[in-house]
Amino acid sequence: SQTIHQWPATLVQPVGSPLSLECTVEGTSNPNLYWYRQAAGRGLQLLFYSVGIGQISSEVPQNLSASRPQDRQFILSSKKLLLSDSGFYLCACTGGNQPQHFGDGTRLSIL
Amino acid sequence: SQQGEEDPQALSIQEGENATMNCSYKTSINNLQWYRQNSGRGLVHLILIRSNEREKHSGRLRVTLDTSKKSSSLLITASRAADTASYFCATDGPGGGADGLTFGKGTHLIIQP
Image 1 (cartoon, chains in turn blue, brown):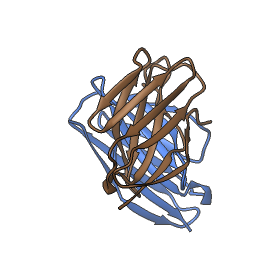
Image 2: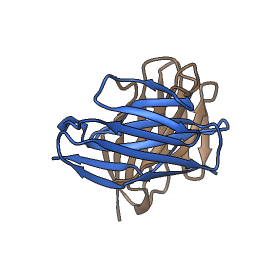
Image 3: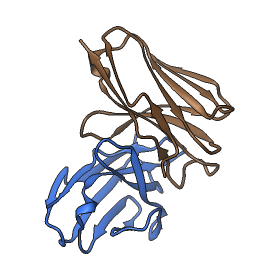
Image 4: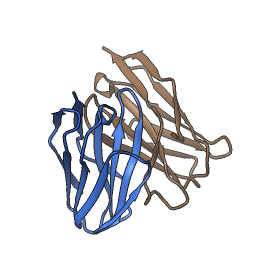
């Protein structure tokens, strides 16, 4: 079965600092990978998805970027964080005709 | 914008009672899924129902889908304290979800012991 690793679990960053969140997947190959953001008390908003190495699709204009340097690695980045980037970031994957499975998320607080 | 809208936004019931949550969506779907989220954690997949299915069961969970009304319901029978969580419906499009899911805002369920 698929296992998704996200780290760190929590992160506190100052405004204007860079960001790198990593997600790795085990138990599947050629997965579709996703980054979602969840604001407090809200549902999830899709930020990026990737169907293969180096292939990134963005759903909303934003201050963030994503990269997929390896088949089972998905990275969320920012050069300069904004206060509005605070939230709960979740990585998800699908593979082999399975429902999306989620990691445990990273809670990002911007000060 | 979010496609799904769950109601109620919050629900508090006594342990042992049944809990019903509803979800409405706006566009055509391929599948509809329900997820559970414990506080501060990731989402756990509960059940998937396809657009050509009307009802599906999994343990104490029962999901219905009415594509003519663009709505779904999740019933949890004989609720337990451990069922306390937020529940989200999620829909995909004709592409089957390869380009991601659209989530509702969720129902926060509290089971009183």
